[in-house]
Length: 356
Image (cartoon, rainbow, N blue to C red):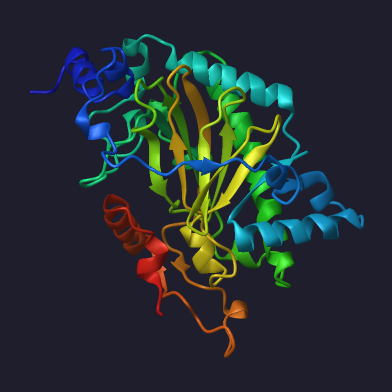
């Protein structure tokens, strides 16, 4: 017998972090990192100078373009990430988008679960559905959608409320596709490759998947993480952070660093596929999200993923006798299998794909 809407709602609600958070001070053991986790360093000057790329200057034909291109290359070689400003999406739009995302997560449960399917493993509203094996569970709920191209969308998961939400998703998705294309071209140019080199690796229609994430206040932030340390199974990820509450942190040389909120900036990080594509010239960054005892936080991550038919591997121009091929070639079905296996074990997928 098919489940009723009420039964589906109850099944989804049982797993929601938001519902757990309503129960007071007790945090279930499955969320607890029993040994805690190391703290993070605060280096705002690094983010304001070395890791801040001016998109407008980067894509211009002025001498400033070379300066920004060098910053982009150094950031991706050393850190695997940077923040980008003057990207063509107005601060007022981003602020309104964050506001609308918060309004969605503030809706009654019966409205949010209209975007859910208890049998769907990846898309829709609910708690993170990736297996974390024996590791502590993540303290967040989310809405996971296919954003681009339009023909790949599962519109049944798109929210009807707030009324402007879907329209803003459409508008933002179009802007993201243009920003990402320009960044991929800049990445290629920074390595003296043809500008479409990295774009051609992804097939004709790169998929953009979006995860809108809600982190409820957590009574035990020193033992609970919003997202555990991981690298993304993407070519690239572009994150729209909460404009009021920080929480994202990145790892470099075994140390953790806080990522500050810079008004109007988007956070860009390379994923595992990007590291493979660049034959290790650029790094896939390991990152995590901490929790906050007092304030809820939201964010929106856009994941750039190649067509399923694409063979993934280092571009031939970056393989030579002095820089031999570091990673095996694979297709997306193989990569997904390996990614989910390594994610559940707390391992980096690129380490499993290395040839030496």
